[in-house]
Amino acid sequence: VPNLGIDPRESYETMTTFIAATGKGDIPTGSIGYKTIFAVGTALFLLTLAMNMIAIRFVRRYRQVYE
Image (cartoon, helix red, strand yellow):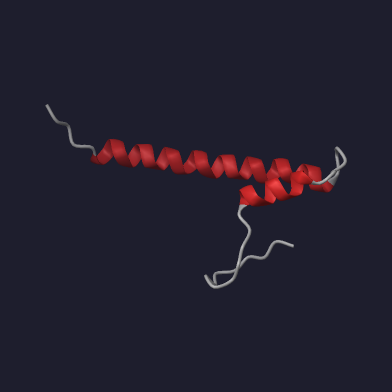
């Protein structure tokens, strides 16, 4: 069961680990477990895309041009 918290001493499962652990078993197509793999994968993709877009804007703004 996913557990949200801010205590750094507690152990947490990353999104990638969740996808790998859930997909390892024999999950029927169309089940909730099957759909959660794609939901978590989509969320991971969107978070990565957003972070990359922010980083690109940051680099473009503060880049020094050398001759």
